[in-house]
Image 1 (tube, rainbow, N blue to C red):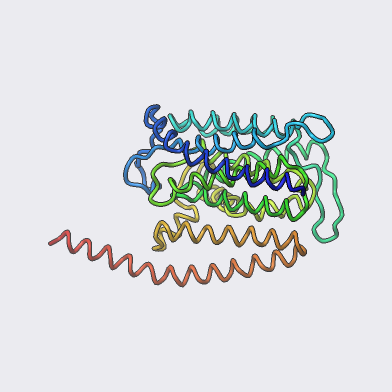
Image 2 (image 1 turned 180 degrees about the vertical axis):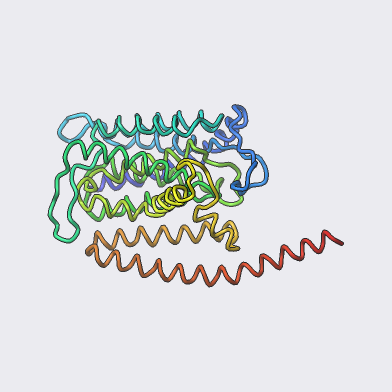
Length: 366
């Protein structure tokens, strides 16, 4: 990587962070004016008072300005960078859909269809997996064109919704997306990727998330809404199948980096099928809800999930530096230790929670 590329990456991160940070209060004002406000009305909501939910608009602005400023719209060969344009067009569609949904919730099927359209546009412009490297033999297996197109569209739409479903606690989706962006950027640099546009997108997305987090971490001043959560998922999905990810362990590395939202969504789908509920029906069975119900505080739950996401990302980085078996071993070891520690801590937290509720009831009786 040249020195100028390194400067571009740093500048992309800094510019996105500053714009996102400065634009968030403006996004909050716009949200209240257009009625994009989240009013707590069911058990899934963790907040107690209405909050603006157009914070994702600030994230998008920071990302967009940074990418336009530092990414390459023309490749070294002189041809147009259609993949970059495809990601920007698709992300714009996702953001417009999110704005309308934050103002007035739209049907889940309609949103999914629009997400498929956005993903299809990006894929047709070059954002897709073309082959998969066997992680054990190193042999490259080319994908049939139809499988390449269909699989890439489903991957983008799936990750888009996975990150959206993860957005249930203050700072959770923004923090996890920051970790995933930094992990993807680190892996791209370690693999000596020379596509400045992909590096800039990963850096800009991380910077935009970090700029938004001061307003969104518990207690949140405002939410990112579907505008932000679906946008983050969409861009992360697109970046994760670009450059060397098109072939190099094209399944396992992105799967580990984005493991938390993907696994949480997969379990949600299985859970709803077993209960014979609609797959897109909301519930209170996500991992962050489970941790809250075990007695962990809001902030503790978010930090726990940050750590889990860092472990998964670390496993992906080890996999790239060494081999798949060592990365998986490290990830499984830390996850098992983490599950044991969380269960132990949860058992100590629950009695304290019950004792607190009992004392509150006694105070009310008096």
